[in-house]
Image 1 (cartoon, rainbow, N blue to C red):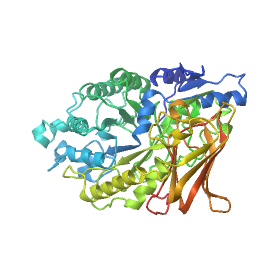
Image 2: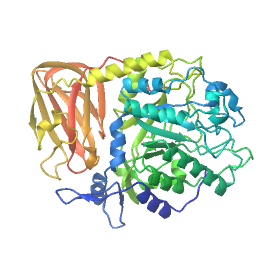
Image 3: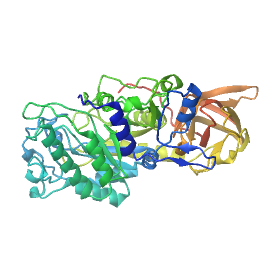
Image 4: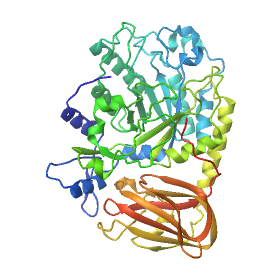
Amino acid sequence: MKIKLPFAFLFVTLIVIASCTAVKNADDVEYSNIVFIDSADTELDIVRKAANVRPSEKQLAWQKYELTAFFHYGVNTFTGREWGTGKEDPAIFNPTDLDVDQWVKTMKDAGFKLAILTAKHHDGFCLWPSEQTEHSIKNSPYQDGKGDIVKEFTDACKKYGIKAGIYLSPWDMNHPTYGDSPAYNEVFRQQLTELLSNYGPIDEVWFDGANGEGPNGKTQEYDFPSYYQLINELQPNAVIAIMGPDVRWVGTETGYGRLTEWSVVPTDGTTIDKVAAESQSQVSFAPKKDLRGEDLGSRSVIKDASGLVWYPAETDVSIRQGWFFHEDQEPKSLEKLLDIYVSSVGRNGVLLLNVPPDKRGRIHEKDSLVLAEFGKIIKDVFSINLIKDAEVTGDGKNLNSLLDDDFDSYWTTNSESDTTATIEFEADQPVEFNTVQLQEYIALGQRVESFVVEYWNENAWETAGEGTTIGYKRILNFDPVTSSKIRLRITSSRLNPRLSSFGLFNMPQFSSNENP
């Protein structure tokens, strides 16, 4: 997809539509989720600016969800395809035992905080009775054409206390105006208006960049800035993901994030052309292409940027091989899901796990079982910090805040110039652990560039694990060790680091495998 807009225009657009705010803290330092780089700025000036870029309120709320769900459901469920054709007869959409409550409750019980429904996929079939097309649920046998699955979905989200999100494909293989850019852009805005006006709060709107031919053989020029403006008018608390200014795609559909994941990246990477090229526009499921790279925001990258923006990563994967349900596919194992959790949420990302309902209209029993086991283990493991009552000594202020359960209380060094620190934790008795979890106080930015976790083996300090970025959450697994003394060393940071929490845990043993 090629949409040509001057960078300066898009840059200003992003400032408006990302709901940027600039505030000052007690130290009179200004924070915003987007900053300009001046030609006179030195590399140290740029690092200082990067350290003070922070998430918007809705970006921070989204990051705290950690676990989000995707429900791919539509005519593809009944044809066995991943991408439809737009020529499907609506009569094929006929679930025999549809239970959206069961979908949402399954994810709620597994610890998920938000769910996204494919209200319309590329085939153009709408799961609500849209006034903009006849290719919708209103012409299907479901509830004699009186059904509205979007309403069932949002009602279930309200019932179970889960945030609701909407996927609406800009590509529409069925609509006759697709490819007539002004006309179809208005149709698409009207569909957005229907979805964002009639179903209560929507907390995430999810676009990919797929752009193929419509029924007239033409492709479309999407007017994304107008879509963003409309979303922010109708649902100002919703993050706009993937083809949007608030949340970016991590670059792979395997569920694995980068080992070094910066949420502060150059604005040059948020232009529409670049986002479109790296927004799943050419993939359907189990893609071969991996667009992660390994360095989006290090000092060597940001030194040449024209601006910096808070643009966090969403890490998506399906519990099965495909995004829509296929009878011959099996769900991922519990071991695999745990590995994905550590490699997504535990790498400064939000996990978006697709769980496709079957032809009956239910989450399959096999999927429900592994999700229940997954949710229980995550809850049980991370509810017990093995050094919660340890004595904390070392550099900096508010040391005990590292072991409380309050995200908004945080440790930091004594001055802005202190970019390294050593903190020791001593428990009454030796503890056995194989997992460490750290959190930065990202409400005021992301700063840590490298750290080491060590344990005392009665003779010397030995390394248990080490990493680069922390961000909202960093989880490291290693072979079990036992000690009563543990040491955290921050070895590099952009200005003074700020940490909300530090904990040791025991996870079930599994081997990391980054293959789909």
